[in-house]
Every structure is written in C-alpha cells, then in structure tokens.
Amino acid sequence: MSTPSSPARPDALPPTAGRARWSPRRRALVARTVQYGLLVAVLVVLALVVDWSQVGPAFFNGEAAREVLPKIPQAFLNTLRYTAAGFAVGLSLGTLLALMRMSSVGLNRWIATVYIEFFRGIPALLVVIGIGYALPIAFGGGIGSLTGKLALALGIVSAAYVAETLRAGLQAVPKGQIEAARSLGMSHTRTLVSVVIPQAFRIVLPPMTNEFILLTKDTSLVFILGMAVDQYDLTKVGREALNTAAGGFTPLFLVGACYLLITLPLGYLARYLERRGARSH
Image 1 (tube, rainbow, N blue to C red):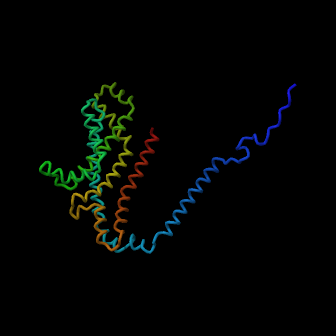
Image 2: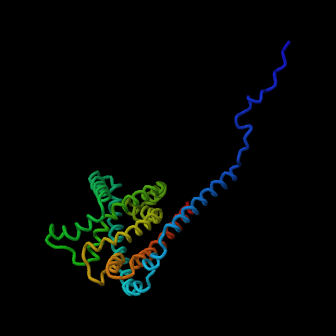
Image 3: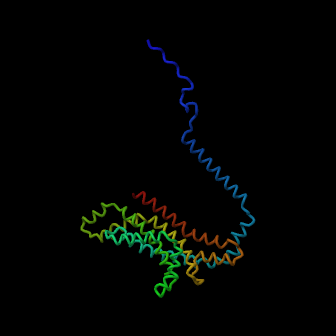
C-alpha cells in the first residue's frame, strides 16, 4: 500500500517565489529615473563649480564680437571653398581607387591597397606639409594657388576613405542588376557607368556627407601653408582674434558657431538620407 506524499516544505519553494518581480515597464521607468537623476546631479555640480563672473566677459564680450564679425563672412566662404575643392579631388581620386581595388588586374588592386592603407595611416597634417613644402623641392616648383595646394593635400587623404566607402557601396549593388544589364547587351564598362556606380552612390551618400563634414574641419590645417588676410579660414580668424581681442574666447565661440552652421545641416541631411534609404530598402 502506497504512503501519502508529504506536503511540500516551505524551504523547498523556488528562491524567487517569495519576491515580487518588477514588470519590464517598471524596470525601464526606474532606469530612466536613475539616469535623469544622475544627469541633474552632474548639471548641478557643474553649475556650482563654474565661475560665472568670468564666463560672461570671456565668452560673450560684445566689443570683441564686433571686432571679429566683419571678418567672418569672407572666412566662412573661404572655408566652404576649401572644403568643396578638397572633396572634389577626394571624390574623383577615391572613385578611381575603388574601381582599382575591385579590378581583376592584380597590380591595380595592389596599388590601390597600398595607397589606401598608407594615407589612412598618416595624419593629414603631414600630407599638407608635404604638399606645401616638400613637393616644390622634389619637383622644382609647386602649386601657386593656396586653394589648389589645400585641395590636393586634403583630397589625397580623403580619397583613401572615399575609396573604401565606395567599394562597400559597389559591392552592395545586387548582382542581379549587373546580370540584367549584361543580358540586355551592355558592355562591362557601360554596365559599370550606367547601372552600378549610380546605385552605389545612392547607397553611400550618407557616409559621403559625413566625409564632407570631416573635410570641413580639416580645412583648419590651411594655416600651415601661409596665407593672406583675404584667404583666412574660420579657424585662422579665430586664432588671430584670440591674440588681439580683449574679449577672451569670444572669437573662438563665434567661429565654433559658424562651423556648426555648416556641419549641423549636413548631419541632419545624412540622417535623413539614411532613413530614406532604409525605407527604400
């Protein structure tokens, strides 16, 4: 005859049976509350540490702003011109390097790989110095235009990054598109120019926008080449004003705001293109 089973002991219950479990919504609420609390604490500490009596005269000096503002428009245009010239060189050379990297000819792939790895591994500052001072010594003459010097220097460096970005875009084009074009009688070159490259550019447009933003900031290296007053970029204007104006860091504050006027819209454009590409995909 079987014996009745003994009742379960209290200490045999699962470890979590006696604890109330939080729902995912409550855990998320607690996590957000802790994060906001930490943020408020940091802001309070910063507000207590900052010497507010010095912030106004140093960063918001009206006299210093009036002194530097007339120079800002020309410097703003110079910065855009240097950026556009460098990007044009980088995009053209980068496209060629991307095609060489994907070439069936081993020598082309080797040249493109060495170029990309080399110029991605050295600072842009060294390239600007080389174009501005070493190139005239090596070839007995240099580029007369300041914009040309900077465009070549920044374009050479940018091309290495553009090439890798474009290569990823070219490889992302569906092979069915290429096969369909070839079945219609298109040659390999025409397929590449008419089908592959246009689609690749649409794919890589957001990262290309980011590369333009990086080039905008790299134009600050133009001061190494020497320039006339009418050739100053935004950073050079800020540096010069910082040495002469009585307003402390007010010129740098204005110059930084001008850079944001260029980079913030480009950042929003890149995110918009990413969302649009995701919807299309």
